[in-house]
Image 1 (spheres, rainbow, N blue to C red):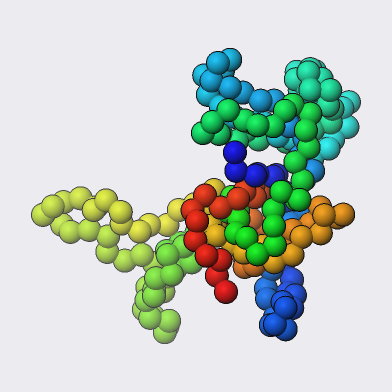
Image 2: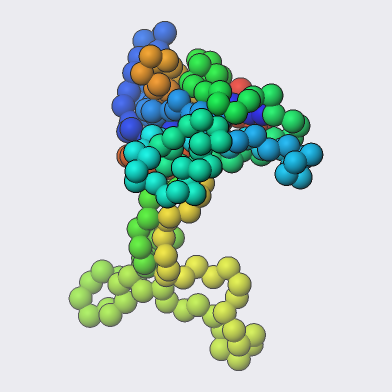
Length: 214
């Protein structure tokens, strides 16, 4: 199983590395994430581990949620995530996963949801040029022609159009772990990641082995 944690994006800042170079980093408050359920091929048909985060008052949760967590002697976990495993999980129910499972200098993948921008036109959504900005052109930020007339008589598949922008799951791979603060459950990752400050993401050990970007 790849070491995975549910984390909250705190924001971006910058730190100095060992060579006194300024590095832009994203700060995450990751875990601790207790293991709420372990699934195996024998009992569930596939291997997976379910973890929870963050804590919430049990009185504000449903009876079904409290009942599920009570099987693991836990309570007050509002967010549950399931991580698939290729083999039988080695962790047990009740164990707690923390940032200590990561190491400085290694790489991680961050899975998050991009910021939503609502319905947008082609200039903002696809960075098109647009029309003349002078008076009287009547064509400033429109999409323009999108197809041919008689032949083939339809709009080609893949034509850029206005529509809903953002709010999609995206994964940024092979981000270098710059610093880890185990006492504060903080992990600093080089570069930017999807999502707004305060949003929840998944941080996992990189699936693809590739040297971290310098």
